[in-house]
Length: 147
Ligand SMILES: [Zn+2]
Image 1: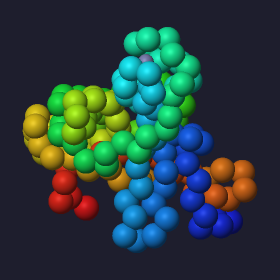
Image 2: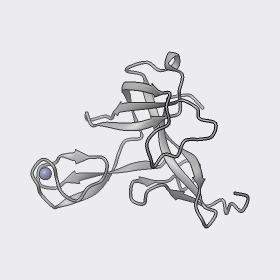
Image 3: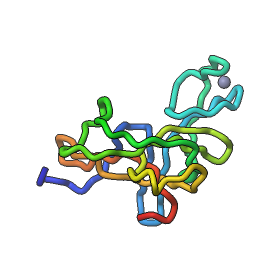
Image 4: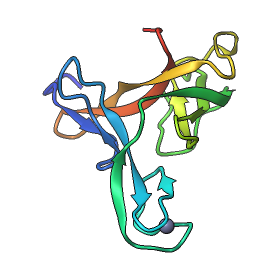
């Protein structure tokens, strides 16, 4: 730390598109099968539904509803290296418009502030720095309207 370039890079290449300007909110990248129309997150090469190999990248909605959640009071398995000291964190299933449900870290870890069905939106957070001093960004969902 200390030599930060201020440049942001995604935690995993191809998984997300970081905001490029203050008005750009960024998005997570999924796949859509051109043959059967099935959509996936995380992005994949082969359709689980029809085994087709003709998939295209799609921008997933950066808004959804909280479908289910839990708060983890134990460190997560790799690759999410726990902060030291460890703080509990929220994990949620977010239902996107269209019905796709994806699993994501949440910014909120207080179960009293989370409610099934509440509106959620995508946000990006610095996770750490890579060897070149770039900020490595991960995505989380936050309650809409929260900072
Ligand atoms: Zn398919």
